[in-house]
Image (cartoon, rainbow, N blue to C red; front, top):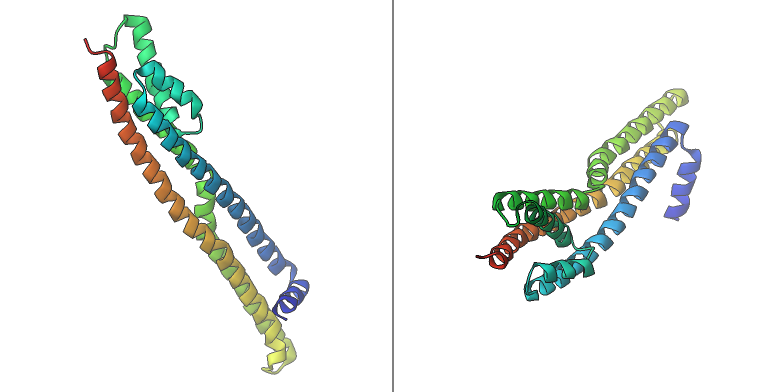
Length: 219
C-alpha cells in the first residue's frame, strides 16, 4: 500500500518538486557507488598493507624490501616505500652514499601525503551529500507547503482534501533528503577513521624504513 501511495505522489508531483526528488536520487546513487567502491578499495588496501608489512619485516635489505613492494602494489605502504627508495637511489647515484637523511624523511612524508590524498579521493562528494541533501529536501518541503496553501486558497475551505497532496509531497521530499544524507554522513565518518588509521600506519612505516636504511648503509 505504501509503495503505491508514494508512486502516486510522484506521478502527481509538480515539475519543480519532481526535479528536487530527481536531484536527491542522483546524490544518493552516486554516494552509494562511492561507498561500495571505497569499501572494496579500503579492504584491499588493508589486506595488502598486512601482507606487505610481513614481507618488509622479513626482508634482509632494501632490495628485498622493494621486491616485496612489487608484490603488493595496492598497499599504500608500497607508495611510501617507492618515494623513499627513489630518494635513496638518487643520492647513491649522485654522491655514492646516503648523505642527506633529512631528504629521505621528506620524501617519505611526500609519499604519505600522496597516498592519503589518493585514499581521500571522492570523499568530498560524501561530505557534500551529507550536508546539502537535507537542505534540498527542505526546499522540496517548502514547495509542498506552498502548494498546500495554494490549494487551500483555491478551495476556499480548510479541508484535508485540499492540503493533503501538497503536504504529502513535502514529507516525501524531506524523507528523500534524509535518506540521501544519513548513509553519506555515516560512511564519511567511518571512512575518515579508516584513512586516519592508514595514515598512522604509514607514519610508523616511515620510521621502520629509516631504521632499515640506517642498518643497510651503516658504516
